[in-house]
Image 1 (cartoon, protein in one colour):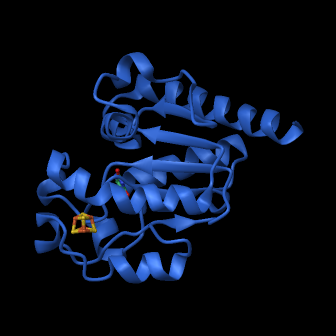
Image 2 (cartoon, helix red, strand yellow; image 1 turned 60 degrees about the vertical axis):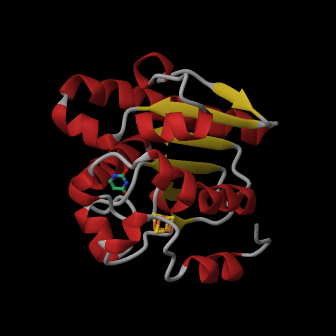
Length: 187
Ligand code: URA
Ligand code: SF4
């Protein structure tokens, strides 16, 4: 674990801890406010993210940005990262060994950001962060508190592109997050 961003970022450059290193263009480290109250965690980079080195810049990310704007939330206020930092081939779900290899970096990012709230975007984020016993269909929309962090599991924005009904639930979950930010700020 590193106690500063420079060393952490340095340590990940040229990472070959898992086989996802073989096909990546860029490591997608994470972006946003390093002192954010809210951290968003996705699954892994897609083609656009791999090309640009920034999380959630493709279609799914653009949809998420629209939801932020609609709710009066600012993307720049959040810290956004993924379970794995290199693109899985054909956007497949990260395998267990890959997620395990990469999670240390993400844990270190959480320690440095010290968020009060973590939004888990989809099943991969939920299962790798809170445990395999959780399922996204049941857990989404409910707060789970662990070690003084409030977790809100919700749909992965890519799922919204395939299923209109999920958009409303995603919207409601982000509204919950907005309310929680306000409640925590009043304390
Ligand atoms: N999907 C993810 O899970 N993360 C990204 O950064 C982009 C798409
Ligand atoms: Fe390293 Fe993570 Fe990329 Fe695997 S996915 S090579 S652990 S940075």
